Image 1: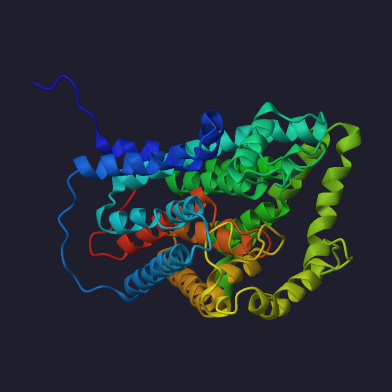
Image 2: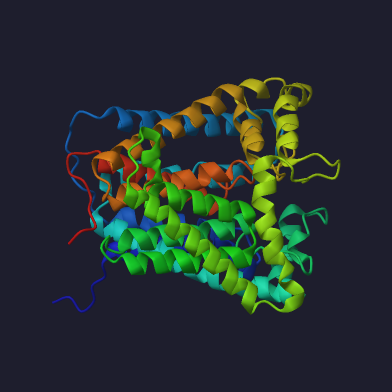
Length: 447
């Protein structure tokens, strides 16, 4: 008789939590090695768990496209690793780091596309929810400390010291340590922290039954309040547009199939936005209430192109245009071949990244042909998901995948988040879910 039994599928809960919260763990131990923890748990899982017997069938075009996309991406990462290793343009530690960050997450895709089950998906969604709740609670605390009290948390100081230790330099971004500025939260940047708060909302919406409308609205409402407190404008915009398009079915406008119910949903989201801002305005001290008014002015100015975001008095749209049109000359002077293959995935080699235009930085990494290939592939995949929702609007798993992809794509207009360690892993999991959902034996969360 077994005295102890353990469901190995529960390891997926630990895998997701360790993927998202890996930075705090690294800071705690002052070492980059804990980044391998989720992959250590993953390899334990596949070593002991019996894989599902794979049944051959004719692949659908969307599955072939995802396979090609991941295959080309994998080859590009390995190619950059190889040539930079052979020519010694980057250090061994930098190359190994790039391999772990950009190559290892593909393991999740190659395994899960055939072996993911309803139970594994449920645990993955629970893990995303728990991670997002932890990130969200600390995001609110960190924002309160930094924006209202003007104090820097001990954790922010430790992260800054860890980044100095990793880069072996004092020339790092100290924005995390600025008083009366928006907080970064628990993760690498405020954009990544905001993203995981949003992803937790998407996961919760996937787990909550469609008929529990009040619960779904409440989850969206709480998420909006946390994002407004965090003041990450791109995250707020990406969340609102993703929710309006997919949760409230505004994507049907693309085929002129929006109904009165859809228009009512738009009214609901407007009410939620207004209520969230009013609540935050009322709970803030009088000297900080101007932040809400600045937030209201931010989006119209950004969309109209009037918002000055640069020291040279250029607007966001002007700066984006300058960066896009200046890219060929800049890359040609630095690394001519980079126009075709990009400058790769290491830190020490390549053009400077970390600016205001994520889409341009992605262009730096991949080069023009691969950038266009990946962007077109993602747009086609989102279009496929929208078509799937036209047929079955109640497919919450497809909605979850669409929400994640749309959010990440919108974020590219300002700050790149796809290359975050945690978000890149999630993207490959999402690709695997889409692949699995187009097999004869689909996964489902319905009991």
